[in-house]
Image 1 (tube, rainbow over the protein chains, first blue to last red):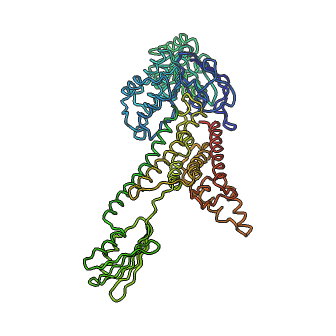
Image 2 (cartoon, chains in turn blue, green):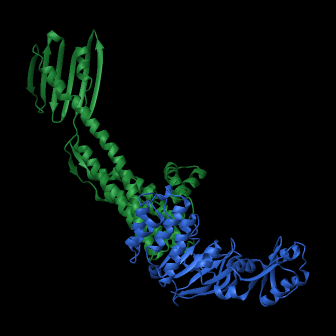
Image 3 (tube, rainbow over the protein chains, first blue to last red):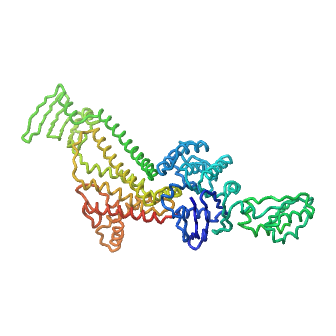
Length: 300
Length: 340
């Protein structure tokens, strides 16, 4: 199932929580929606799922607007637990069974085993991690074509975080479309093939993860002393960011990484290497590039 | 089935009703057991007649009354007993100890009256008993059960606000429209309210059977219908007043009874007031009372006082049906506009 979000704006009074957002999510992709707290990720999800009315803009699923029938093929893990405190795990599963024709009891039982959830336990007696696990079980038990996962590993221990990540990758391999939001950028990097970065309600970066990564490189040099001056490189337009930790210096470069590496060698670097950018670097550059560069340039 | 959560809520509310009825049933059983150890007016008559030293004289009066005179000089006892239909009267003069033995643990299931004086060591007592006629008006029973239905309606009130209290992410991501899910919830709740009333009616009849075999009568279908529609209208009002709330449906439910009773109480209390201020207060509260289902909650048959200008049971039923429909429609319209 593909999703097209076209010029979506959601205002609360005069405050625009989401501002003119356009996103194309291809069918079968894992799409990471990233952004700092308050960037508008959850509001985007609420509009996507019809829980909040957009101020303007349109959203289409396979080219059609959202209808109640769409939810037969869609599941959602919210950022905060929406489970019923007074209901047990079994009752929540029964609720899913009665509501969704695609509910798979065998799959639900496997997932309960995976997260070691006690079927008889009431939600009021469950930890935050167990609640997240139950929400994940409910979402995956209906074998949806589209999953919207807002912080699906929140509160989970590392083992269960890994399990959720595997579920996402497996679901994607079977053709499901996954829209994922998480502050665990490493997890998004492992799962997502497309990302968009939201800041103050606007998209500041979007694209295919591999392409974004190949846009820039990291050139890392290790020097004998900490007193080497890089003033000449600080003004180089090819460099978007510099970091220095003791004898180690890292440059994020848009182009000419080999030339920068040669310059570092000429400046007396003991070793120089060129590495790919990771998603965290891309995210930090996108949400506040000026602040990072200024800070590092100042220290160089 | 998208009303599973509401179905569970209704089940929990009915469980509370069952617990209340169960406690009352246990109390009724205890009372029945106690009554086995007590004695009735027939036992008093028997003990007076059966004394070996008593002279007993029966005679039938012109009106059919059986008059029994018991004269027992050896026990300083003199009694005149009159039995007519289900009425028994006993005038007895006897020593205090004997009198006490007869009247202690004396229980009757009908009306009774007992009075005595003590003079020269003897007690002169007068006892009047009238057994119930066993007639049992079903409309009155429904009226009493209507109170239990109002309790159920209060427990189930505000179903949409309960969903809005942190559960919309689950409730609104099911393959069903908001309108359909709201209407399904209303249906489940109303069925539970009616069920609680019917169960209470059955329980009351069982309690009565512990003591007498009732001759069930039905004086008014209208009272039965009124007792059933009032809790539904009350539920609808709670739902309408809370459906836009994001938090705290309990506040609406908690304040609803005192507020509703104050409105109807002040409206009735200031009726016919002559002072302009009191009249203005009456008008204000009477207007509120027209939209307060509890102001119509009078399930008595024959002593109907109405609500303001609405004097008849049939017009009250029509008004309550309208209120229920309007309140529920208002709740659905508000529910459409709610945002997560």
